[in-house]
Length: 434
Image (cartoon, rainbow, N blue to C red; front, side):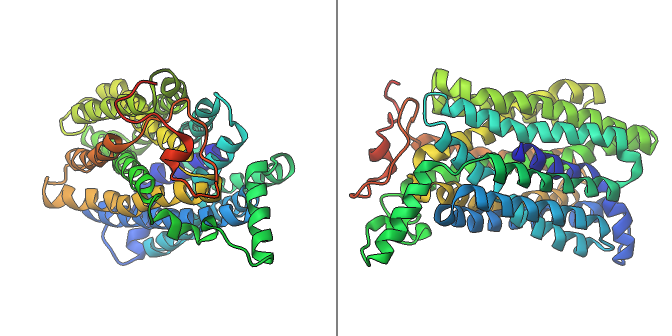
């Protein structure tokens, strides 16, 4: 539910980015044209992603030291409140600052939520449960598209105010979601050792452990997978609404018709995403994590390469965009199914967060660069620029090449010998049978 509301608020911004920049740029002393919308709109998205990455690391570390549920609650409130406050911005840079702070809170949902679900569902249904959880994000995107189609005429400010809804989730979260016994035990034993002035290797600061052998390998693998998946996803999801608007403008269609087309396209993109998210865990249990990643990568690569670099009709976009969503969202789902299986509980949330946050820092440049290269290299062609940026997602294939297969393996645990994730969980290595 929290991930769905996060997706709802995040997608709203992508849908209203064009209208927001159209209103705010004159207030900032800038002219409204495609170049400036691309540049400054990309900057606000980049600031959000940078905040998301920073918040992911911050809240991920806190979750490993203070528990999952409490940290989730703080992050959700931060995200919801500052996204709603962005509705009152008067200039593009005010909007950017508020989006950065909202991003800090948004960083908590995926890594801490994935760790929480994996620790609650420790049986053979773990991957499926994580996949279903992740599908909430695409579901939130779908609901946002529906809301935009129904309420978009009220303006972009009204739409951002709706983002305060996730704050009401905190009451449910704190009342009905228990802290996993595993992390509670880890926190208690860590405190007891500190009281007795007795230390073990796993008491070392969590980020230092993640960046040192034997855990560095797992961190690098997960970082490569996350970075490639995120580069492709944000390059596409940020700019396809503006591409649809540009097509509508070229056909001399009204703003209302353009908004309607954006909403329909977004719903189809996210419908494919819901399926990609929800089915990834089932697919990974059936054919293995590595092969499931490859299915997502191939599907998104082929559909993006066909759709974005070339001129197509609106109807073609409606037919192909669900396949794009299926592949892109599926890969994101895989990162949060696979990540918990690579780290022990004392560093699980931090490990997932660090890998994805490094990816988000790198990805933060994607939406900005797409807007810049569209005007510098491709004569304003956002479609080609989007495809070029999405192609950098090939980084994920490097991570996949070295990734161990974890299907059927138990979650790693903290041991006195501080074993590496590969040794602790005994996953099946690349090239062996499951």
